[in-house]
Image 1 (cartoon, rainbow, N blue to C red):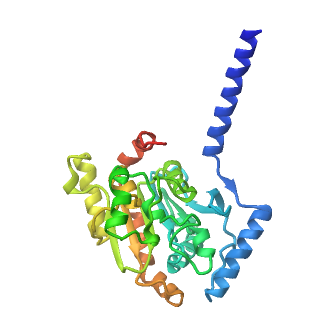
Image 2: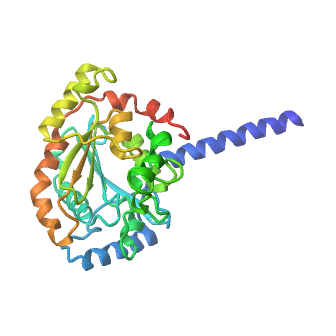
Image 3: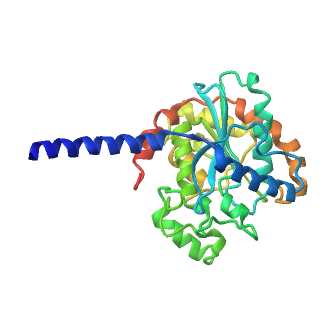
Length: 315
């Protein structure tokens, strides 16, 4: 009897583990009532901003998670799913940075009509990482828990510096609160899971309104951390994009993906969050985004990605 119970217990654990793994790996298509609700809310927001784009026009949205308030965290992917040249793009990580959302949706519409041009190339775009902050009134930089999602990644320096830096450097500014623990927010876990699942060679995160292009990742200054050939290619990528390195912030995506994981990561800061200027910014920066997508970076960081993330505390 005890043996039978033990066997059933082991079998149950196996099923639970399999179910958990499947849930982690699977991406659900946004459909049914969830799709109607999301599209209605998005279209109302886009209309209020006077943008001539439709966030649901022929786009096959996938769901990679849910926000604090239960909104779907969506993304769309284009090109060859087996391509080694893969670019992952995030936008609207801060809900009050409005213009990045336009670029994210417009880029998706642009890619949708040019899939034949994505030869040996894959692009995955998550245009609204912080839907709760964007949909709140007034819009907020933070998520619904009051956490700055660009300070919540479990970077190597988080536990020592994140809260200390927030208190001393930012004088406990609520807009920059990193959370009481790293990776505490579903939107942070969504981005981390997207990196693990997509396994990108490059990452772009679109923000506003600081008006510069920042680079985090391997360079000729970090030859001791990464293979020299890989670091030199990443440095060429930085120079090709005319990006500068402004330093690392505890818990930021650039720190996490670029410094810890070794994936070259660009942060495009648009000149303003003024929705009236969003289309002009798209016209100004779309060729630069295309240049980034086309630039080929070796898969060194991708090959080590699962191991690197598994080493993270709590991962």
